Image (cartoon, rainbow, N blue to C red):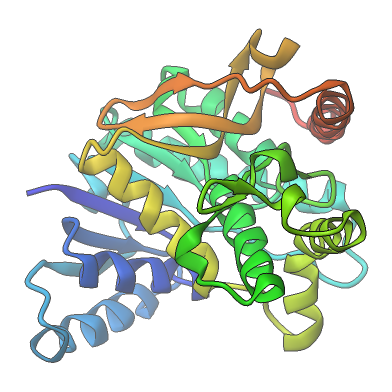
Length: 307
């Protein structure tokens, strides 16, 4: 049986565990530093199994020993950015949390694939790669799948069509420097640039870039967790089921797109071995420039870390 561990029992982590269990992708372990929190949430989920019809084990723990022999470790642990907190503060705090998680992964799940969800996503993915010393193909971040889903949702709403018909593409960093790519965003194979005006496309691109902030503003406290958790499931399924699915993910670049020694969102092919290939698109000069500006923002955020 496949074993999947989720570190972090907050809203994202717990919802990931729920979706994993209901998808029956494997037995699930939820780990958190708060005593009783992962155990209580895991027990609650396990008691829903007769009603939801899933037949996998769900365990909560405060001990990294319980992630032993995991096939995939999903890292959702971290703090959100709070009022008065600088981006550098967030990087420093969450990098310490990710360092602890990576230490546990190295000790108890040294053969696992590591999927990072903690923000700032691109920085934490690179940090996790350095902290674990894992091969680059085994460490990846959840960014483009979520951002592309948001873009696809907005396109479907604009065109009053089924979301099933929309395939969106968003690359670059997970934040306000992300790069939605309208030319590679299609509805039943038709580029949205042929279906929507330039102004409409620009409006949807802007909403996609600000989608996370839009939800935060509406919630007042907290941030998104339904769509992020769904994005994690799509990626975990590709990994453990060896789907060889093509999707955007934050991965280590070594010359692709003219970028090296950083983690950034680009299209990849995912399977049981992790990142099987990085797919290089013909982006055109304007989009390529935007991607490189996005990379520059990630490099600037990395300066405060000793890696």
